[in-house]
Length: 323
Image (cartoon, rainbow, N blue to C red; front, top):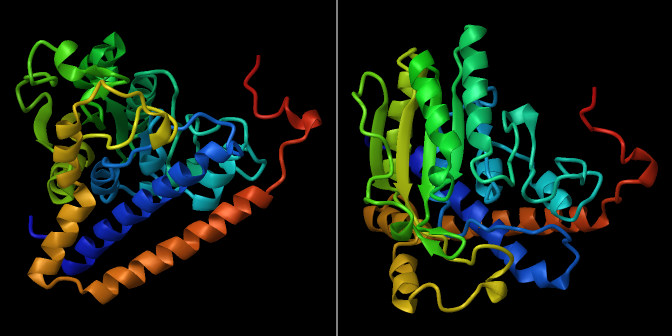
């Protein structure tokens, strides 16, 4: 599907915004003001932006430990994100969750999970709730190739097929589960199930091409809203940073330098930028204007987070589930 100029600009802007947020965190993480572990999604921005571009605030998503991009693409508040990373009361999870437990139900983000594969059954359950309540909504599970090794993925996928649920499973195959390459954990290059398309629509795409992600997600969302059941999209991508923390903390030696350089050249933001400039769809001046606006928003949100109050001891019992 040929995208309009406005859609192209929106996708480009949102990818740049997520990237700049991640770079800001990378720059300041070693100052040790942020007490939460972080997992940056630098290099993977095209996937949340392309998928969430078809979702409404009422649609559901479930995320994982590398979830800043999912949170922002779904409409999460940037001030709330930064404040959560500083463990502040004004954080989106009231300072109780940190980077791996972001929540914003107002925009349909029903939580990240630090458990590998933990968000998959949650998204499947939300899909069941949608169907039982006869709502015209969809539920999306974002997860990595490490989670594709977990049994809960196949259990959830099978359940979604059996019940014909409006669930979209988005596999962000960034090639590594911590330091273990996907080829050491999967017997073939195709992780996804081969199923009759009337039961499960599947595809494997370049997850660094936001247009391909956007178009694949459009088909999956349309199927889900039409009552045709689940879809599974494997997006091949790469995390340009380390597994956790900032770039300076990444372990050395488990990734060939040539491999990293190859994927840097396939950067989703640079690729779209070069395409838009070549097509005359955007000007350097417009890009600079976008960047200035993003950087100003980030600086304001970062300072807001730093100045926000910490939770007080007498309120630590709040927001707990107990019987």
